[in-house]
Image (spheres, rainbow, N blue to C red):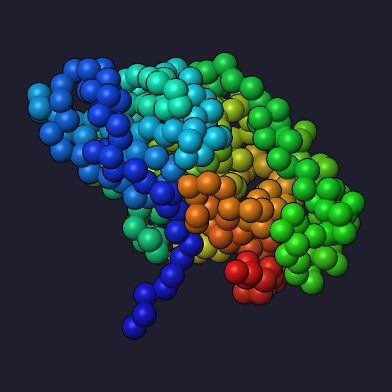
Length: 333
């Protein structure tokens, strides 16, 4: 029997030993010991170094580093992540941040290593239950937010206006790929819903805003949340809603089956859910149809597949039936 295939979350990794020697010497001085073994981690979209390091003094660390020469936008994401990671309290399930180092064009971040693994794909229900419970616990521990960060609407608002732009552009994303008949027919409704998400996004919870399987590490005792550059403050249910389309596209249940019975969903008004789904559908589909960014060959198909699941969820809520496959066409090419 053939194993199902799912969109891959993989950037173009740089093995640690291929980093220029003067940078490795600089980082090993910061680590306090030479590296005797480095194991590249393949999951995730960063187009640089992502390595579990074994040091000569017996300690273990995780290092991520990127050069602006590989992707000009990635260093700024790393700076954002360093700012958030340095401020996260010990009570939240995130790897302990150690340091950030800038050696232009490189930015490097070091963490204590978490000896865990990402969830298995396709999703196993036992691991999914653990993650859903962990999201609840983290949300409660992060309300009110222990960090002073901008609100969700300020951080993500500029990226959540796509259907309104699509109406002006005749419903076609930048790459010229059609969204499909249902989306074209309902473009006015999508634009109207998208215009309504902002008031309901307000809240007091620290949000991760990028929870996916490749940003999770599971140990026997704990579910850790990694990669925090998009953190902000907003309504507690947003992290859950943004997470579930990736679960569905990677072999998990339909998102509404999980969302509707999750405790964080109880505070979300039905109209707010529809509005946020419309906004996320536009985000993922427009980005999925955009040109491939340097060093991230799998990012656009991954985003497009998320968009397919968000539109599927929205259709279920608006029409009362699961449209299953075919709501949004496959991404050409």
